[in-house]
Structure formats: C-alpha cells, structure tokens
Length: 111
Length: 113
Image (tube, rainbow over all chains, first blue to last red; front, top):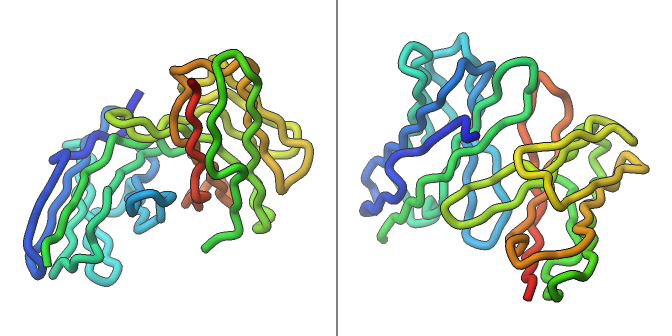
C-alpha cells in the first residue's frame, strides 16, 4: 500500500514561479523523504524530514511536515526549467525504515 | 552519482523465459532493494536485502526471486517472465536503517512479449 500520495499529479508553471507539491500519508511515520526523477533516469534523493521536525530547507527547497494532518509539502522557489521532473514522496513507518513511495507529481517548468 | 550499476539496461524477452537482472554497487552499503516502476503506480518494492544471504519480500514479490551472495551484488530473477512483468526495474541501496536515504541505479527497461 502507498505510504505517500502526491497532489497534484501534474503541475505546469513558468520559470521563476514557485512550485508546491503535497504529500499525504496514511499511518504514522518515522520520517518522510522527497525524491526527484528526471525522465529516463533513476530517483535522486532531495531531502529527509524526521517525524519530530516541522520544516527543513535545502537550497531552493523547503519541506514541511504536519504529523497531525499526516501531510507534507515540498516547495521549490524560483523554479527553473531544469527543475522539470517527477517528484516523489516516500514515508517510512513502524519498525521498518524501508520507504514506501507515492505515485509522484509531474512538474513542468516552462522557460 | 553513487556507484550503482544495473545490467542489462534494456532487455526484450518472450513470455515463459527466465530473466535475471543484476545490480552491482561499489559503496559497500548494507541494504539493497529492487523496485518496479509502472505508469500510475509509482515505485513498488519487489524484494530487499539487509545483508549477504538475508532477503525479504516486498509489496509485489509474486513471480520474482532474489539472491545476494556478495555485499556488492543483488540479483533479481523472473523464473518465467509474463507480460505483466513488463516494466522499468530500479535497484537502490542505502547505508543504515536509521538514515535511509536511498541511492538509485539507472534502471533496466524490460519488455516481455
């Protein structure tokens, strides 16, 4: 079962705009990760946020976690055409640290 | 990029034939995983390994087996390939359970006719 469902499924924006993707999950998590996948490539880890953290930053990325709502968001500020990719959230829960991935958000940034 | 390679990168085979995909890492990471990626399903875990000769099933393990005889190699076998196993297969590795950032290989595109 999916421990992470991204919303929206697809997002199209102009370069320079901010992109926000959301992730909802079903059961309590130990941590939640975000990954990026460029077309035809493997996934690349972006950021990990633990269950006791509420916000993390990495460059132009900002991730928030709301455990009461079982949701997370990924914000990409000042987007670039090179940010065009699919973005996945993955939650780890229980005694297992194996992440379970959602179906992803496809982001297109138009130059 | 983390040192993960997958072979072959592309394969076309016929229904009923055996297929083995190989994942090789040079990072000495303990954990290795096989996922399949299909449109509308995201990534789904097939099998994983937490050490040499230590493996366990994932969400979609039916029709697949794995083996890990060395730290660096994790093999995925389809004993008798079916068209439903047409997919892109990704291998991933992670170092320790508590910091489970995964590093992914480039993927293998398998087509079963």
